[in-house]
Length: 368
Ligand SMILES: Cc1cc2nc3c(=O)[nH]c(=O)nc-3n(C[C@H](O)[C@H](O)[C@H](O)COP(=O)(O)OP(=O)(O)OC[C@H]3O[C@@H](n4cnc5c(N)ncnc54)[C@H](O)[C@@H]3O)c2cc1C
Image (cartoon, rainbow, N blue to C red; front, side):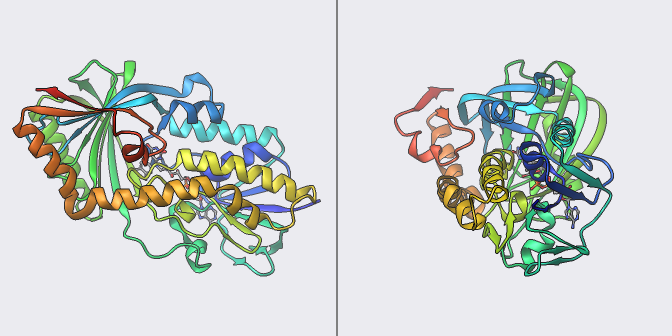
């Protein structure tokens, strides 16, 4: 019987284990599944369906993303998505996947950090395996040493979950490329009927995150966007915005933030991991059953459509963010001089390249 080790029991490691079960053994350094919390939990409806998650994990549903490019907060770009975006309870998702993995016979060892990995002999800590899955997330301790991922400028994020009121009753998300976060963006995610709201900031500078979040909150309150009753909790982490790295080394297969499987414009990882997880689970089962001898080759081959999408959208993201969003800011300034706002329809949330490939012909301009 094959022995397969999974390094990291975050979303990637748990999702893969929930698909395969036995003979996977997952090592997770934290003692509690899903913690510490870091993710905003926004996914498309199709990703939610594809993950086969229970409905009670949904905490919000959105049809429109409003993007603001100046501190006056005129509504300049409105993005209508081709299917709803959902906010899911991210800790709940990982707990759910954990129990599904256990039910299928996977072993999840909590509170155990993998300290040693011998890539040639496939020794993890002190035991030998037939295959290793690297799902260590943004830590990238082993993926860097194996040369799977290069040095990239990280994006740091801090979020605040609060009790309060959001000014709009419609199902919208708001994104701000404004003064607190000029090199990335900030956001508001209202959590439906709970009366909770998540506000977050992200920037390439780590030290000033607290200050940026306080400033963002102050601006939102001043502009009447959000009324804050009570601060509930702060959370966050490092966001991976690509570029995609190599997917493995020999019999070590990488998935998730460890290898840069993220949508480069937002850093969203759940969709690409779900896609890659399904592919990888079939390949691992093929390997276990003796049908596949070179799992890495098969993995890279089968992921080609996703790889192309992520590479293309990485270039797109660089162009959009170039010199503090010069291009979109110029366009939005011109439009606001003409008293119109740009409306983009049918945006595919999971395929950011659809901003270019699909959007032409679906653009609209609305008098403001
Ligand atoms: C602030 C923020 C907001 C985000 N919002 C969204 C969003 O709205 N939508 C979306 O799709 N994506 C979002 N993402 C990205 C998404 O959360 C990640 O892409 C996803 O969690 C990556 O999963 P992973 O399993 O690769 O990594 P992780 O979830 O980080 O899991 C890796 C796990 O490996 C463990 N580990 C690491 N090294 C070892 C070791 N040596 N031994 C044992 N265990 C180890 C870690 O403890 C961790 O639990 C966001 C990310 C951040 C930081």
